[in-house]
Length: 226
Figure 1 (cartoon, rainbow, N blue to C red):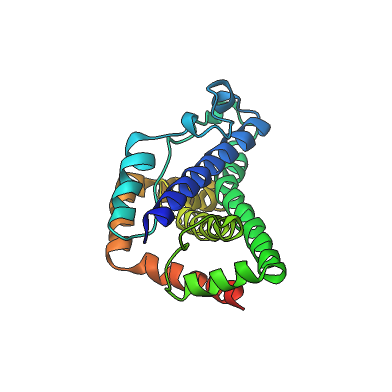
Figure 2 (cartoon, rainbow, N blue to C red):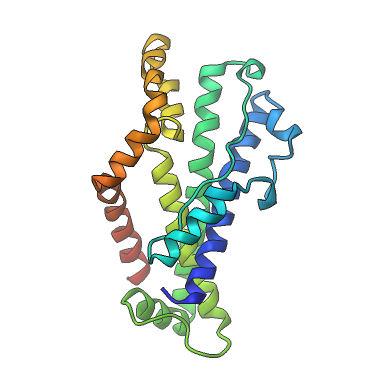
């Protein structure tokens, strides 16, 4: 990955994380909990969501190791006392972050398809880039640059959404699952929360996350290329 791609991927990751957390806070506010809103977390200003480790250090380490940009932001605080129906509302609050990322990904994919149709430069650049022929050549290339930004918007937002939908605490998928389970089953399921981080690390180590992500990645590449 060249330096231009690294910079773009890091900025796109920051945008994706910001959209994700702002969506959580906005839905919580709509469900009756003003906690995140009062703390200034219902905003697209990334400064409000930055976590020094998850948003800065961890993504930098990954990209300079040649791995995809990935990370996390400060969790959006939610006070269940303020929610009208805590179990149901928490389901929607949990789903809001991944849903926002998938919407951004879908919009980016739609725009990139339009660019590919109406701009031969964008099409040729995409084919060359995705087939491993390098990044942008020297000079000013606004269409190709926009295409690269949109490509990383699709990839990173999709990664973030899929990862967060894994039903392991503290990921959003666990909040969605607990909203669907009975109250007793949800209580029992939540008992794995202290071990959630270790379980997630185990899934990553065993390559199960790659098994989930790879088919989605192939689908994205196929749609973009053809």
